[in-house]
Length: 75
Image (tube, rainbow, N blue to C red):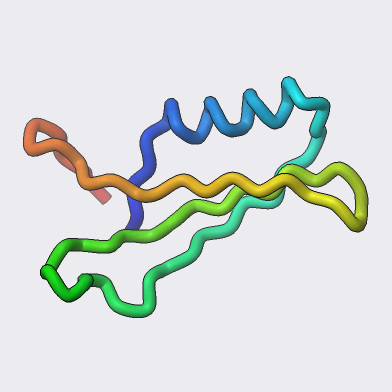
């Protein structure tokens, strides 16, 4: 499960709305390898494509984050 900051997502979508976009396609890109050569967690990337028409989109990418130690995630 990837975790993203709400403010990062909202800022991206609000910017797209301000630019006049009405629709967004949201997908998630998972890394091929979960760790890089320095054993750092690479994480996933959220991809937001604002759709202007059938031939043009504006793309924004948001990297996942690790929860701070004082947070807990219950599933």
